Image 1: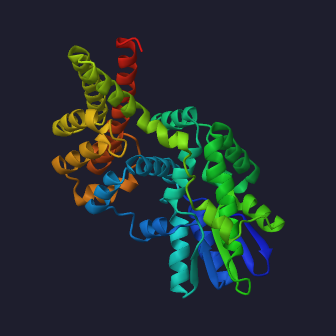
Image 2: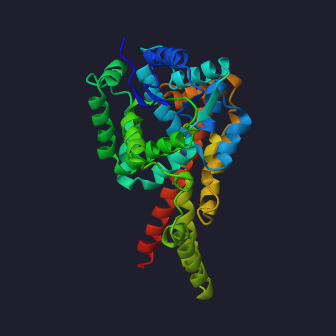
Image 3: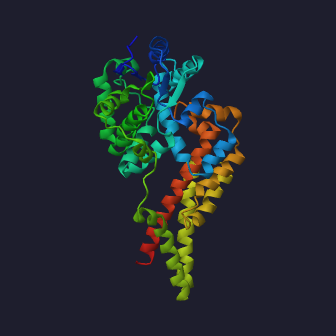
Length: 388
C-alpha cells in the first residue's frame, strides 16, 4: 500500500496529501484523525462540493431546470466530464472521487471536531479557468475529453502518483503546458487559495488539512514564504474577471450589423434585398441550431424549437436558443429519479447521451453552439452576398 504524503508545517499544523480516488488515502485520513487528534479538520472542499458529496451527489428536476435557465449547462458538463476522468482512475481502487474528503468530514463530525471548508467554489474555478483559456486550448481540452475512450497504457497508477511526488509535479506541469490558462487557475490560484484559507484558521488550535497531493508543494511554499493571500486577496480570487468593453460589445456586433442592414434596405425600399437578407439569416441560424440539437439526439420538438428560436435569439445576446430547446427536451423526455441520481456518476461520454438528464444538458449546449455558428455563418454570407 502506498504511503500517503504528509507535511508537519508546525507543531499545530499537519497537511495530508491525498489522491481523490485512492483507498490508501481513505485509510490514511482515518488514521491521521485518530492519531494526530486535531481540533480542526480542514478539507479541500467548497460548500457546493461538500453538499454534493454528503447528499450522495444527487440532482433534482428543479436543479436541472435551473442549470438550463442560468446557462450553466456547459460548466456542469465540463465538471461531470472531468469527474468521469477521475472516476476511471478510481474504478480499480473501488472509490469514487472525493471519497477521502467525505470520510474526513464524517470522521470529524463523529469525533465532534470542527470542519473547515477551504477550497474555492467549483463553479468559480471552472468559470475562471474557461475565461483564461485561449480558444485553441478550449478546443484541445474538449477534443481530449471527446477522445476519452482511448486507453493510455503508460498512464501512472494512483499508488505511483502518491509515492513519486516528482512524477506528480511533472504531470501538473504537463497540464500547464497543455493549457497555460487552465494551469494558472487549477494549480497556481488554488495553491494560493488553499494556503490562504489554511493560514486564516486559528493558530492556537491543532489543524489537520486534507488536500490533493498535487497541491502539497505549492501550499507548503506559500506558507513557508508567507505569500498566501490575505482576506482581500482571497476575495479577489473568488470573483470572476470583469469583461472589458470590447469583450462586452462583441456579442452585440452581429445583431447590430443585421439590424443596420435591415434599416438600410427598408429606408431605400429594397424589398428584394431585405427578403434575401431575411432568408439567409433565418436559414443559416435554423439549420445550424437544429444540427447542433440533432447531434445531441434531441427530441424532434426540441430540434424544431432550436431551429425556430435561433434566428430570434441570435439578435438578442441575453437569450439563447439552447435554453428553449433544453426546456422542451426536459418536458418531452423527462428524466426519472434514477437518471437524476446517476447523472453525476456517469463514466463515459456515451453515457451523457443515454442518460436523460445528461441529454438535456447536451441539447442545451450543442443547440447554443449551433446557433452561434449559424449567426457567424449568416453574417459572413450576408457580407459576401451584398459585397460588403
